[in-house]
Length: 139
Image 1 (cartoon, one colour):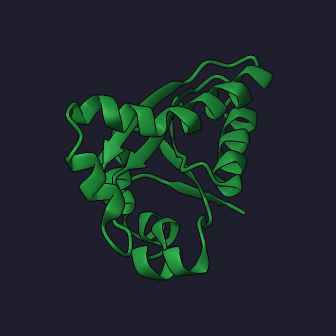
Image 2 (cartoon, rainbow, N blue to C red):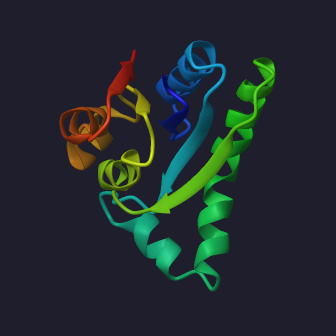
Image 3 (tube, rainbow, N blue to C red):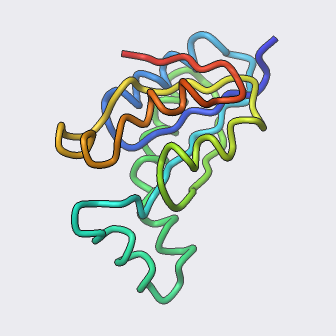
């Protein structure tokens, strides 16, 4: 039985579909939305900008706020509660570091622009191949 579900969200449409899938298919599970901030960019702007913030943790939470607010809106449509977590770093690594604490991971198949996917790599594919728990990829 699936009782704990991890849903990585980055603000993309595919990530929202992944959360909707989890809410529909695991209505009795504890769902956690994970948002990764400070990921690498072409100029390392996000990571460097976050590192220069006076209160690192508060800045990371502020960057994830919009995604978490949207996740809560979606959960409310299903009359469900969810937990939210913020991680800093490379998305695939951050997801894999937490995956073993859950029964499954539900992840959107892709996000961002083609350039982002080429630079950062295909996060969903990496998670799918390396996860210690089952992964459902949503398109």
